[in-house]
Length: 265
Image (cartoon, rainbow, N blue to C red; front, side, top):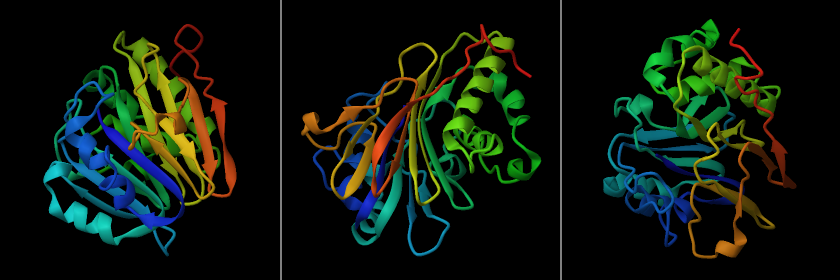
């Protein structure tokens, strides 16, 4: 599965998380330690906020470790809030449109995990995306569909509630289709101000996710980028992390309805 980092705080160069640390995201692209696979070579992406409301994007299908442009951009671009992602495909094509992060308006999203039985479930999931948002879909991944579905669930007003609703709807659709494969999610979402992270697995085996907060920044990562393990906190399963640059992060539960208690509408 994929690896990612998210940052919010005093502006820093992207390379300070993407390229420079001992276990940077580029290092994780071929040396992941807590992922299902150690190689994440099916593309990468950067999303960052600057002086405009809408984020910038740079996505490419090359492995992160072999793209010199990534290192140059990460060395020169400074941002107060950014996402970076290295991809290990769970079955969809390796294309720029399928690389994370995904953007819509001022919103950024990235994901690690999978919707079990995606090839069987894709049509039903895409039917849950409102027409106005479906027109913005450019790729074929379950991740992008989850993003647009979440925005359609009211994500701009209540991101945690919308993600909870999305996961509940996905679990209901999976049950209706007789899919036993798990739904596993770590995801990050931002409007350029607040930063949200989510961790959930229907089988109790969520992908790894950690966070730390200093006086000047919040960092959320699939794997710690350094060896100061005592500084990093695991995000609990079935939880959301709600952060802003000038407030303490808050861990809140994701009250996902499981199939025994919910039916697909």
